[in-house]
Image (tube, rainbow, N blue to C red; front, side):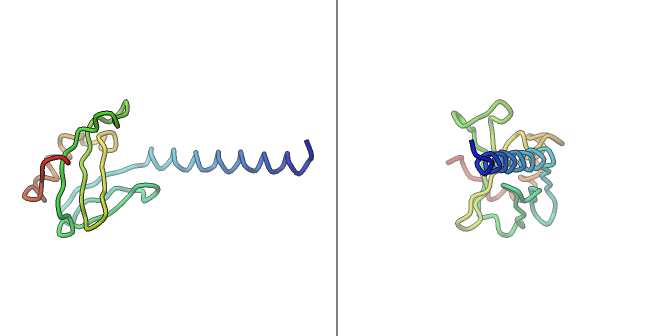
Length: 116
């Protein structure tokens, strides 16, 4: 193997490792907050968002079925225009998913629809 190939391979592994570390840290630091202004899922990498309640057209609590993982069997899906946003059960460790659903109902209960 040439020196150039070894350097390229090492660089590729380094980039993959760095991306994995960033993704892992983002998952660990995930926070979902619900308040009078709206809902926020941070950090914004890779699936974070912030939306105000007046922008939420509809939302539903969905059973993930075959798409579930070992940490999430349910999700809340929000529709904002053409965008669809989701908060999975595992992303709301504190105060818990059921409390999260109650908080969303308190602010946008009239826009809850049956799962689709």
